[in-house]
Image (cartoon, rainbow, N blue to C red; front, side):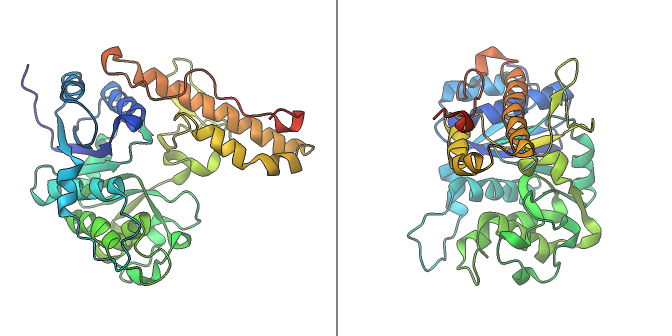
Length: 332
């Protein structure tokens, strides 16, 4: 095995094989687009052989840490522990904190395994190294990242107050305490509503240790896209390696897992009544057509990257097109 040069930067992710489609697609995309970064993976359920194949497939270092080992750093102080803490939402911040505290990297990019990132990211690592926090915005609010209540984290009590989402976030050495509080706060009693929830904890940590003049927002319309399925129509470029919205602005990443078996079906079932109520509304039904189109374009795009290295390609995704039930036509 050839010795690989260690990068100054690293992706941080937690994953099991059920989310492998997202991780492998992003790893292949980052190789394809030439991002200079290692991978630090908190894992469960991957065999030694599977991990070795993935590690050997890439020119960058791929390091694996068991999630069970990362959870040793988690302190659960909650009075009511009947509902367990979400191990992934805690451990990617635990791993990021360890790496920054040990100064193993100058900057890290923390992503979720159901986030697909498909542009070169070198500039954002350098920005984080220089002390600027780059954060994807929360998709379902109207708050920009720089409008968070810095200095008063107790104003962030639930998802209505969020400016930052944990899909893609770049942190440098200056942001070590943000990574730490992003998981420690999840283990505390909520003082109001969702104040110890995972994304709320991240926003509170940023309010504690960040500042308005040192945060760069990654636009929710180009980096997360959760709220756009009804409103725009994504399409690939001629070579199929880039994707654009309908006003021809390139998309950089998205957070979604409609590619998992049953996920899209469950969402369509949840929308059954509103579809039936609006089946004669042409504008609404056009939006439903957009959703179906976008789900399939997204999955096709991810398949391209997932399948680039056949021996490590994930098999945990829907095969064939995603089709919505045509409730308005009487189809169940």
